[in-house]
Image (cartoon, rainbow, N blue to C red):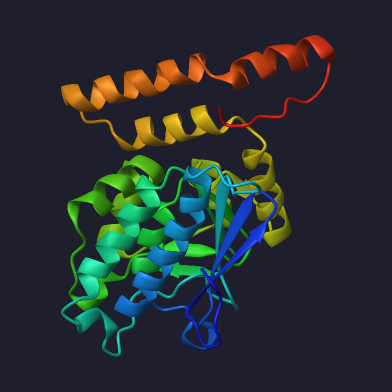
Length: 257
């Protein structure tokens, strides 16, 4: 995805990390249908090169917000009330969860409402001292879809999810790290280093674990597909590379094959 002047989202490749950034700090990176579609396109572009096996393709997506806010949620000055907003939002969130690459949220400021949903959709989160997530739906008369409620319970824990959804409570860095919602408390440098570390791991089991964790449906077809994906990891060249690296006392270099 080529970055253009005034675009709401940018995509930059840093080695094996695709850095996707919301670039509307003047609007606190608030979401409308166009921003959701732009973010969806950037994520798909990052994954397409990886799926095609392109040289130097990214293995991890690092998602950021430019300026003091990660994402202030839906644009309440019209965006959230547009007919196409919820469809675009749903597609964006599904793209994050279904992407074959792990997505790490670098949250250095508020992630509010739909911004909190975006943080929930990501696989991992690094939160800075000024980061906080909350959902003021009850203050605006909104409701959130059952997926968001279930995801909040899974990642935040049932009690905290109730505090956030029913009382509009905020979750800051300390509580997020203590609960495991954020894997790390740190700044954007720490987030990038985390992304690089994840990118250096074997990509096939990384993709498998993401898919398995996001698909707890006992459906027979889903289960058999996941079993085949797990078997492919065991049969991969990367397993042999890891064995060789252990014997040679070196860091393995995984090719994703």
